[in-house]
Image (tube, rainbow, N blue to C red; front, side, top):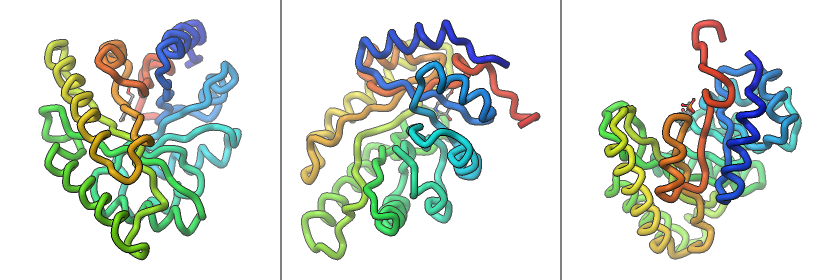
Length: 234
Ligand SMILES: *Cc1c(COP(=O)(O)O)cnc(C)c1O
């Protein structure tokens, strides 16, 4: 299925005007489809599966910014650590430490977002407000005490979240609003890198306009750009 180029330019321009970064979510989509969008000027792409991302990275132009947006297992971090641009889905201290370790091996600093659990559904990954607070405290502590314990090869750039899957706009708007409040609260709490905390990743095909109205500055859009995903054929 060809990429919807007119719609792409329309969305891309609309977001650029508002200083919102567009991440094109290309999971299950082919290298050819990604190239089509790349040739229209898109540089940021998001993937959910480590293996799929690693394969696409090797086949596609090296100036693509690859965003990892799926659930990440610690033992797979090493596969994306050499090249990943931003990991949106950090949901534990253990994972942060693993990312830090692999970043160090690759002599780079990996940018990360902490994934917030805001939707009502039980199935969604992410940290609640208390867990978020604990992680940020642990990071402040580690980086303010010994050099040896410091977590210097990651940079926490902000938060990522998903709203509930519902047609009820009120619920979705309320959840985006809560995420923005958390973002504002925690941007003040990261004592060791206050200015770097600047990304709020929220909004997908169905709800990105509302997310931007509520303060998102990075949206992750898949099906609207690439067409519906077909999981059976991939
Ligand atoms: C698949 C996915 C998206 C994109 O979803 P669409 O509804 O196709 O825009 C965004 N964020 C995450 C975390 C995803 O898994």
